[in-house]
Length: 346
Image (tube, rainbow, N blue to C red; front, side, top):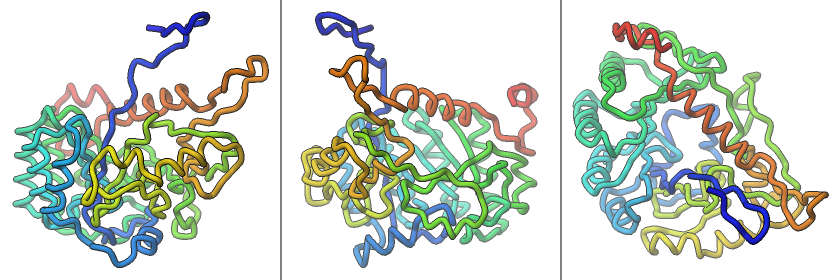
């Protein structure tokens, strides 16, 4: 329904993505993926708490509005922290919507049984379960194959194929979607994948000749293409919150959720400085958004000087939403699936 401002109607989008808080349960991810700027994160995070404690996780959640989705993802494998399963259980018991992005590292067979039971019991609260699997190029350098890993992976594949969850997806860091050779007995193919530099945070020498998105340098004012409120944030183990999942350099620390409340993040000095940099014409290395391919760029419309013209705005979000829907709707090609109706969907 268009909103009117006296003359021409302005089109209002029906919806945007809701706020989320990504939980980084530890710093120093043991998977050491080439496309993940772990060295940058370790260098800027310093000698702060390596692991998020269960007590601090509960404290943080007590401050979060229930419309904020809790994502078990962040800047490291969630289950590299032994308390990840109790954290998941606590978030679900408190009524939060959650998402889980995991390599399955650190998940034992007993853990897998408990996690599957939790996700099944609270399926209406689970937005997505995404498995990040090792690829044929060895980009997940910390991956170690074992019979236990295969058993755990099989349990999650079974859950995903059951149809209990709203969305189930798997990905791998290979342009053709090819998984590690030792897993092809379970997973034959996945969607194609194309890497990016995390808004310039990645040392591209780590990835060799593999294709990667160019890092832009925006010289116009910008805003986030995911959310107009800059509320897709990342919690670090010491309670610090950075602006988003691109900020491995911890360039934009916007508060601390152990010391302060949730809404203080959006009135913080760090948030104000980011808004100011983003609103200023000209490229600036003081804003990670000015190097982000997800940014909306604003230029003065020559024929209507009182308006900004957005490039990559709703169109970018719509393209990205369509891309995401396409990835999520693609059925995994699994040797464990024998449902002919599922085979017809692929």
